[in-house]
Amino acid sequence: MKILFIASECAPLAKVGGLGDVVSGLAKQLRSEGHDVRIVMPLYGQIDPKTTALKFMGPVCVHLGGRQELWAGVYEGLLDNLIPIWFLEHGEFFGRPGIYNENNREYGDNAFRFAFFSKAVLQVCKDRDFLPDVMHAHDWPGSPVAAYLKTWDRVLSPLAATATVLTIHNIGYQGVYPADVMPFLGLGKQWFVPDVCEDHGRVNFLKMGVYFADAITTVSPAHAEEILSPEGGRGLAPYLNRRRADFSGILNGADYSHWSPESDRLIPENFSIHDLSGKAECRRRLKERFGLDEDDSPVVGVVSRFVEQKGLHLAVAVLDRLLASLPFQLVVLGSGDAGLEDYFQKLPLRFPGRAGAFIGFSNELSHWITAGSDFFLVPSLYEPCGLTQIYAMRYGTLPIVRSTGGLRDTVEDYDPETRLGTGFAFDDPAPEALEAVLRRALETWNARPDRIARLMRQAMEQDFSWEKPAGEYLKVYRQAIENRRKLLEAEGVASGKPRLALNPMLESLG
Ligand code: ADP
Ligand code: GLC
Image (tube, rainbow, N blue to C red; front, top):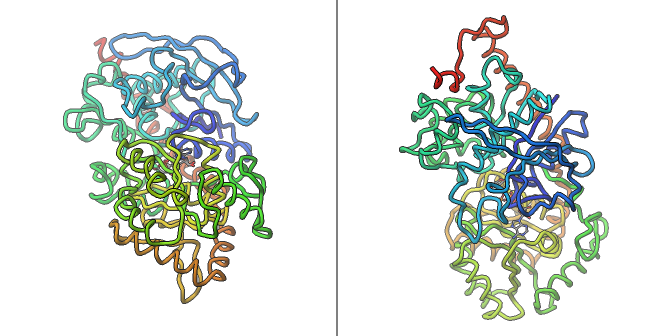
């Protein structure tokens, strides 16, 4: 199958969170199964064409609404020496330090940046004669692609048969912007209605994708259920419910070529389920690096974006008290919300030898914490899938999670009766519930090391590799292609006699 990923992140080149990991991990799996998968993404300022050995392929002329014409450069590279990636270069839009934000402030022109990106993708495909069976758009930044393929490129286009799949990685970010981007998008006024992309007078990119894509997924079965409900859907539940027949949840996989204790090149010492001595060394080095007392107390690790979704304020409400009264240490890596940054930055000053923090983004440290901690805290208010708990389990680091979305689908709460489980879970999004689960985990650690050892083994044996989810995506791709085929058939395009000409450019020209 010919598949094009439309992505605003791709690990390790440009990554803010799990989206980047999923794009490269899924692409690699599909490629290993023989599919012609390619990725297209913006050439951000942080990607240096020289060090990443990119080849300049030429310019592309992008037509937007109002007969606007903008030019971009196209570079080509290879991800992991395997997967072709195209980079769209546009200095004004993408030649900046951040992906979506800078200094915790969202760029004011994100609607224009990603509308341009989406439109350019189609032109690159046509220019390079790569006509995918499926375009797989990820989150709101790629959503306009689905709209373009059903409007500008619906008929009489080399891409008329290309189907679109939209994956919602995070419904908390819908890309809602002032309506003045509509003329630039070049989508006719008939689409600026609540059923399609209008959202209280603004344009909602994700909603547009939900309306136009041939199939829609999110990143875990539990979260798929959640976002069909009014509380979980953040305004999109009615629209997702209309697309229910084409909507499903596929659990994310983990790229174990980067996240395995046996082969991880970023951690101080490798280890495996058969020999955990390296894990003890990872823990010792982690404690040393963060200036923690090198005693026997367990380490609770956190690697997270500091945003409300991640529920860290639940921890903040009880951490001072718990650190003062319970025998554990805390190591935190993350950045974002200024209040949380300030709290965690100052914590080691109040609890020297007991708490450590690094405010910022560091791939190396994220591996150190995942490998060297004993517990891994993910108290999210909502979590579409979550990857950090999946990685932690592989390293025998027991996740302590709130039971929501993908956390619910991946972590099994320890059951003292059966002794089964892969971590610890709590339900109520309240500091007291978090305190109770932390106490439960630490008590088990102190009183029943044999049980903890068994939980660690059970966690390490979990297999979240990409094979199974990739198979599920292929099914969704086929369904999307079939949906697209039926649509073309209904419009008489297949017979060469299109009944509809919905090209808004032609319409606006009268
Ligand atoms: P989300 O995508 O919502 O942030 P996930 O758990 O799916 O949550 O993925 C987060 C990814 O980002 C993981 O690979 C995690 O290790 C990484 N990550 C998050 N914060 C940092 C950070 N400060 N430094 C390095 N990696 C980070
Ligand atoms: C999002 C979600 C996270 C998910 C990731 C990759 O950012 O918050 O739960 O794992 O995307 O799909």
